[in-house]
Length: 297
Image 1 (cartoon, rainbow, N blue to C red):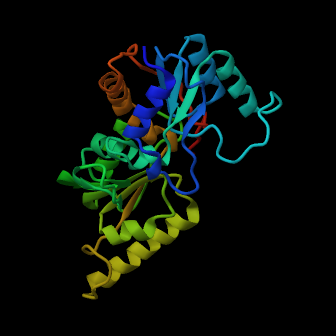
Image 2 (cartoon, one colour):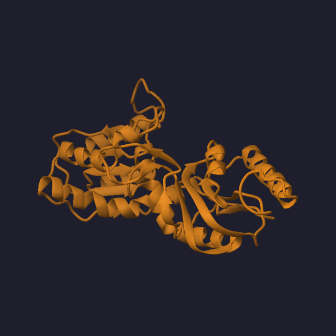
Image 3 (cartoon, rainbow, N blue to C red):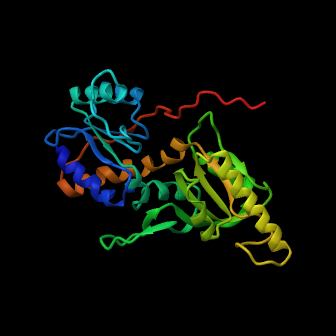
C-alpha cells in the first residue's frame, strides 16, 4: 500500500502548492510520512464532527478544502479546539492534508468543478497562472458561457439545484428576467474581485460571502452604467441591463463540488504514481455550513 509521503507527492502534483495565494498555507497539516494509506476520506471542512467520523471509520488520510489552521499557532494543547483535533488525528494515525487556494486554481480544481456543474463552456481562468509545467489553463475563478441564454432567475435555479442543501440558500441581485449567457464563477469569498469580474465583461457573477456594502456598490454601479448605455454613452460592457448581476451561494456548498472530481482523480493518480491502490474514497456526508436556520418573514 502507498505511504503517506507518496500520497502527498501525488496530491501536490495534482494541486501544486505554488498555486496557493501568498497568505495561504495548504498542504500536510498532520501526519507521519511513513504511515501507510489505505482509506481516504474527503470533506470540505475539518470540523470536530468530521474528525470524529473519520477516526471512527479508521481512515488513514482526510483531505479537506478548508484549512484547520488559518493563522499561526503557538500550542496545540487540548485547551484549544484545534489542539484537540490534532491530538485525535495523531492518536488515530490519520493524516490531514489541505488543498485550499492551490486547489482553487488547479485543473479540475474547485473553480472548474463549480463551473462544470453550472454548465459553463469555453472556460478560462479569471486570473490566469502562467505555469509552464502544465498544458491546462489554470488560475483563480472560471469565466465561461452557457450553451443558450437564459433568464437570471432560471440560471439561479440551475446554480441552486447543483449545490448541496443548506439553510442559508442562494441569494440573487438584479432583474430576474434579465437574460444571461456569460458567467464568472469564483467559489469562496469573492467580493474583493469585483474589478476583475467587471473587466471580464460577464453577465452574471457567482460567488460566496457577498457583504452588504460591496454588493450594493457593485449593483448600484452596474445599474448606473446600464442607464448611461441606454442613452448611447459607451461605458462598461453590455446592453441596457446592469452587468454583472450577482448570485451569492453558501461558501462551503459551492466549494464542496470539487470533492466529486477529487474523489475520482486522487485514487487514479496514486495508482499511476505508485502502482498501489487505496480503498474507494468516500465523502463525509456532514453538512459543515454553520447556519442551522434561516428565517424569512
